[in-house]
Amino acid sequence: MFRRGFRRGAMRPGGPPAVPPLLQKAHQWMQAGNYVAAAEAFEELARKGETVTHPKTGQMYLQAGRARILAGQKDAGFAHFKQGLEFMVRMNQPVRLFHAGNRVVTELNEHGMTAQSQEIAAWLKTALPAAPGMTGAASGAPAAKPALPTHCPGCGGPVRADEIEWLDDVTAECNWCGSPLRAGG
Image 1 (tube, rainbow, N blue to C red):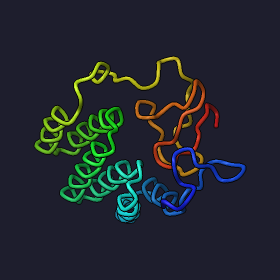
Image 2 (image 1 turned 135 degrees about the vertical axis):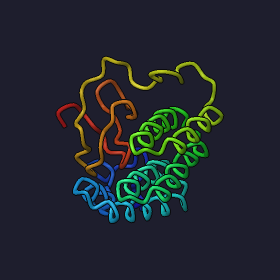
Image 3 (image 1 turned 180 degrees about the vertical axis):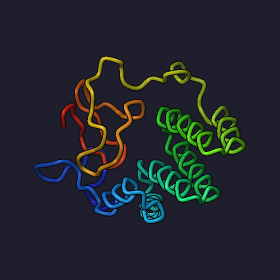
Image 4 (image 1 turned 90 degrees about the vertical axis):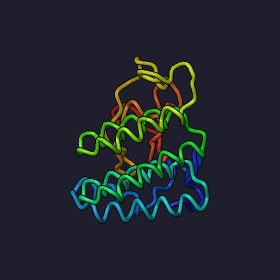
């Protein structure tokens, strides 16, 4: 996953960042409902990312957690959720942690995992910095940004407007592969 050229801003000559084939397959398996295969792929990507302290590693652990929970493996999924959020703390990604943490709390509740949801919610209160904009709809992109595609054309990952990082007024970066995203793209 994290070969040369797969870093924030690193572009292949003449194009967007190289997208690891395993990341594309993982997203395809997730969309097809093959959650065990998707979880295994995201776990492999996360382990590789952790060895090089890659900034997308937390995202990979979170998606592995989602896949495990959807596969009925709730304990493993919860463990991956915690790993992903903790990695975001280590990488000093408070805005990403805020959005991802709130999404995890919601997802755990949706799957009947209320005790785990409460545990993450309590942990987030201690892990997040007390900074302006970190409550309610946290800072990130101003409301007047253009609409983006629902999935990244590079890796196939879901694009969530509240979790995306904007590079300029019309371009955002895929949370999964770093590809530039534009409205209608």
